[in-house]
Image 1: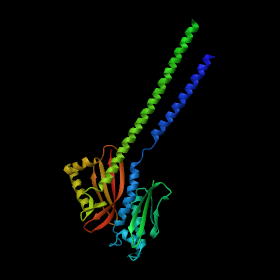
Image 2: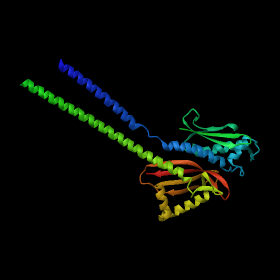
Image 3: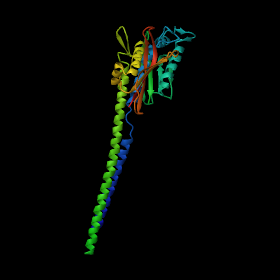
Image 4: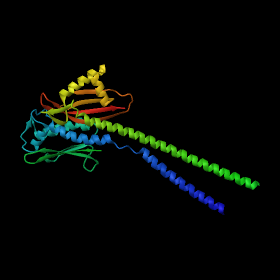
Length: 156
Length: 168
């Protein structure tokens, strides 16, 4: 009777040890396989979004030699006086922006969405929007009166 | 006597069995611990590499050798193409003879490749390999960032992409 009780206790102990071991193994396996935090990706997304906006507003548009892209955006949102060849400032802005995004973010496989609310420009790929996780960078250009708001979102 | 012997034998077998089980548990634990340690070491090394890459990419456009300055005012994320030409030529020339400037930058950057390519205007796009020192292993990390390229003679800005590749 006493031997049977001892055997039962042994079995109970073994069951507990096995359960604890399995829990440890599952935890270890999860810990080993968990992906490291991707500092590079986070930095690249943030830096690409902010640097792209800062850079693109300064560049000189080759089709409109005396204007910067920022200047064309401001004109498109305001007076609409600038004409570059056959295209007005809004058409030229859209065409240049599309080219810039294709040769930078698109080329490097990034999922993005560029919005310029005041002139109704939205250029994006892969369905990147505010609901998807990612990083948004804002840029403001002065308008007389008011401002033009640009937002570039890069999704993860 | 025979019954007592059998009982002793049973107890010895139980002890041996218990010791074997304990040894097996310890071995399994050690294997898992070493795997976990190996994983965390690799993760740490990768994180260090990433941190170094990000740090270097962040610092590159602020180098006085490359950054734009107009009327002594520095500009963010801007590379002066005249300075870029000079630095590329200087490091390219020094690389073959392992001159002072190349060694100076090797101490600063290590095994890496820095390329700056103009992407807009599309016509006449140029590319500069500013620095190159290949690594011995196949492990490499690359980062690409947009930069302004300023031509102080024509006073015009172009869009460029800075690519930093760091080898192990």
